Image 1: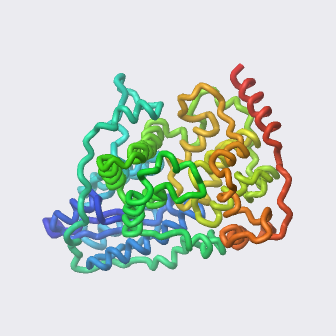
Image 2: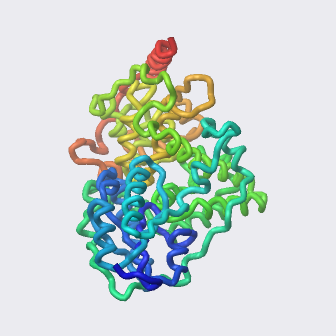
Length: 475
């Protein structure tokens, strides 16, 4: 192994595919030593669902081009991360491996083991912040515990000083020779999307530049009315930055400072946007301190709730296919298959319908979203599903059951959103609604001229059943 100031630094990229406001990569490039950007397709990548894995591939392609434009390149390797890093250290003479921290329990265990192993070999192994505004251990209650109520955490952090965002590195020092790299296409990260990829592609713009452009457009045109309009699914009134955040194509600090500037400019919705940025932080705060929330009920006592767990039950299949007979629910599920995303208000409705009206375990829905969302995020997905199901962090003392019909009357009173995505109820459906039939698996056997189904569960009946089950759980 080469020693001395000229030995390369391996920078291990994961969910941080950007150049601007990247503390670890910025420091590596500023060191003056050669820097080897590396991405490893280990089990954390192979275990991704179809849509997030496909979206990752798009992000890697764009990020690779961004590095090449600056005289660098992204080295791609596949295999267990520890072994891949050992091989690269041997091949390149590098004596340092740096990376940005992740906070899910699997990544924490992997990274801790790798750091310990590398240090015993005399390798400079360092991890950096960058995925969050606040490291989870830096936010605690007065008694030293973690926050279990969002509003209390917001009050605790809203006035904290957030450091200014870093610029991209002025230069990325290259090594004398580049090691071998896999061809990204051979990884076939989009294979499981099948024909759906061509449909969703039209609604995805990967990469750091696209993320910055989206943030700028949102602040310019929509943030002022964000609080009032963000729940109206027919409008382009939200930031739509979630897939960029999930892959680290934009940093939360950039969002925070953009929101603060908008608030200073008296754009009234900016305060609520800042709260949503902290809502994401809250999800990671919970996941870090209570990692069981990814697979089990966060609240005590919910193991007794009589959810059914069969993911292939007929009513669950109807939910997955967007054919429950409840227009708002079905429109939302179809938006998911056409765009890879779902409006946040709609996510609450479809999750409530599955967990309350269909009495199906939240983990069934969480796992399905993990396969279908291009903006899949382990913390946000788990917290969102548990919040709606009732088993998660919610200070509200009552058992919430959303009525999809009433929600539609409130947030889509003219039926614009439902008409955009639901074809069978219209004589001349729009292209958005027809795209659903080109995106979903042929095995579903659905067609635009099918009759619209009757409800698989009447709303009143489902609500009564859910409330009765809740009362029995509470006994």
